[in-house]
Image (tube, rainbow, N blue to C red):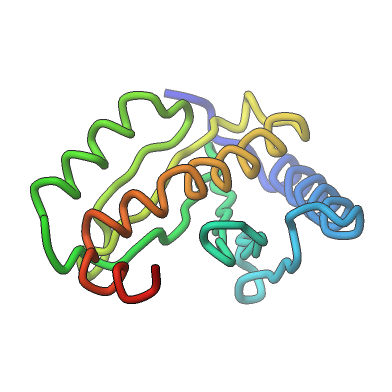
Length: 155
């Protein structure tokens, strides 16, 4: 089990995450907005602009041992359940640092965790960029598989 970090170390991680997110937003990257959780929470909401999915919001949560990251991808599929979930499982095989999961209300999420001992700004950049890339790479195919009736209407 990894060691739990004390409050001072967590404060330092928090400042570093704040600074990286501010710099990424100000640099004109895909980061278009950053919000914080409730006072006292070590949580961020990072909104990114995409191509296939207009916006993806990644929730970053700093814990005593890990930085958890997650994003909502799609609601539960309307049709073709077997094909849809098979695609998710096959996509999970090639992902590094994150995986698709069924979350609240059977919605599809992409989630992962980074041990704080491995945290640095380059790793945060990789996490945020990878999460956006994984969603962008999967969104249309998953939409077509699970929502073919609706998807045909728009294309």
